[in-house]
Picture 1 (tube, protein in one colour):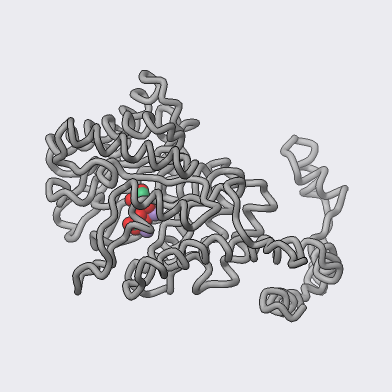
Picture 2 (picture 1 turned 45 degrees about the horizontal axis):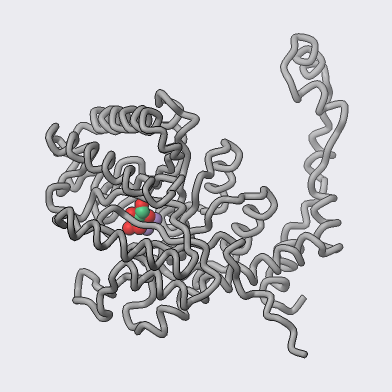
Length: 392
Ligand code: GCO
Ligand code: MN
Ligand code: MN
């Protein structure tokens, strides 16, 4: 009997896609669509065909076009709901499109125009209602147009304060309407604007601390965005976990120094992808794993399905590799030798008391002995390479 393929996903894996991801029509700044547009219900059916997907996420206007009438909106929602029922897909996350409409040409919450800022808040309030209708519990904020093309145009201090005002308003609204959302802020260094505010996840970690409801707000870090900024995504996610702020995650891939590519997860940076999987597994991340990516422009519908299946398959394979890493005696004994503890030093340097401070001041360190301790990282790193490449 053939063994079941252990890399086939199930909804328990909590893999999600956005309507805009598998629904991407292959348009770029240099050329028009290469794939036909799908209705929201058709995207859900496509994900049903992919198999093993947990959920589908949307921007307000992925579901309901910005100019739709009440009647149109009602019909779309009904069709979408029916598709969710047929496929068993959930809607764990929702978000607002605050970047496509020309009104947001100079930003939304950070537009120089009070009317645009107020409209952005209103649009988000309505979109929160829409997400809640479909059961979403995470609400993502990606400030697509929040930024500048010329530094002459905007006061960055003022912009940060405007952004904070909008967040505080929407946190209160969330409480008032009892939506129960957790907000997840998504940073990006540039694109579509030359400079985006809050360019990296760390900017948001600092920002959150100054909010009226910091407990409600966390991060939605994206693999490609931190990679565009030349930062290790694994370290960013580690810091989010340490701060208990990993509320959601956008998985994809990216070559540094390029435009925003939104490549299939695992297609470029195998090592970052491996250590990311290890981090999320080791620390028991249980939220959705959202693929914010799209198939190559050259792909047709059948290849879009392969793209979606491949995204999940790569994660499942990496899970397997992580289990192998964690069970590998040689790797684990190396790690055990590398990480050193010292009970006496842990006591006097772990927590400040006047006594501990004095004991630490009095302690005499052997710098040479500390320097001489071996750190066989070359050996460790090669073992990781062998393991990922499947020869171990
Ligand atoms: C991008 C962003 C978006 C957001 C999405 C949800 O670079 O275009 O990653 O895809 O994730 O708007 O907030
Ligand atoms: Mn992105
Ligand atoms: Mn994203």
